[in-house]
Image 1 (spheres, rainbow, N blue to C red):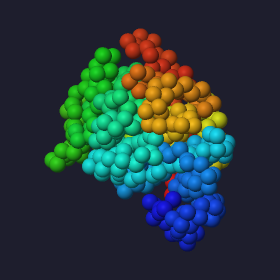
Image 2 (tube, helix red, strand yellow):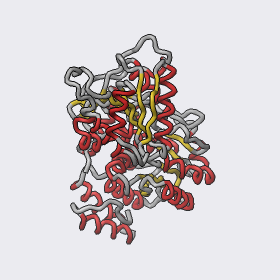
Image 3 (cartoon, one colour):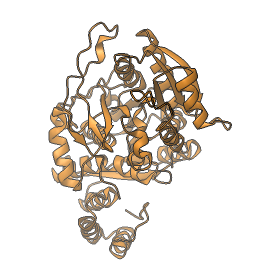
Image 4 (cartoon, one colour):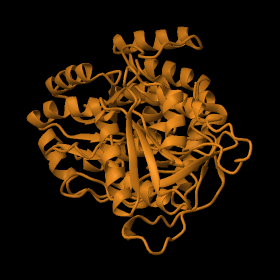
Length: 443
């Protein structure tokens, strides 16, 4: 609450005044100011967090403090999606009078998804003895850089967005499915589509997330009898997008492309989708005028819809969670009422990460005991964004991804039908409807 990490115009005088009061330890006045600013900006999670931090300082007891690391410098919208989940859980806990009068305080850090900055942030958080645990980081590259620092210090880290299967450690947990589960789900879906036995893969060779998703998809797809014809690096300085799309379509004779961009290579993926709009100029072949596009969870953004246009129409992606799943209804309704807009999977898994830390709290909590308690966490569905939560011995959450498809410039939740004759039976998803799923409201 000492200062804001997001630039603003609306309510700036009110926010500046509240931060000054917080710095002066006038927490009642700070809480009032942050609350009024949040009421005027209801989808702004930082303001709700600062309001609750001021309330936590008011109680007369030392608050429980958890840090969350988000990529504000790189992607403000993505950062706010994560913070909405954290803020919602914090607000719920503090409104329930906390634990024995002790409220939850959230420290927000910004690493911009930069591995070097992530490591520096991790080192600073480790030195702050008030920090009991960390939610983050966003990208797998950032998490990979920070994890050894937390591991050495014994500070628990729960990532709500990093899916690389290579992430593991004695302090590492995540509330999001790993790439192994995401790739398996998508590979099954692609392989069961008529004529899609061969694919090309576009990926980011510099990204731990992207390389891992590519490898896991290839493994599952080939296990099911499919063939990956070519792998194309999105960061290749000599990449000719138009030629690669045409070559995939005409020379390789494939009908599908898998897009595995990192956050950093998102623009290149969008340009591939645009180039794919009219790869075939043969007027006698109207049934298959373009590659069918599939992709990973990083593609679930407003940017894809806004900039991709017709190029992303029909794009099918695998995501950890959808608000249209029946089990997600209660959380989705509460979230949309709180934020006056719909939320996406990053908000849901970040809510779950915060709820997990809250469940691990007790009166004399310290880092060691919090870490030990996380291994035995058992959250029921009503305490999460819709599904029970337990961790494996490796800190993984056992949950099943879902599929969404771009239809009329909106993401629609896809019903998963039981497919017979597949060799990997574990990833069938019982949820389903085909209702439109707008993205979270952004600023």
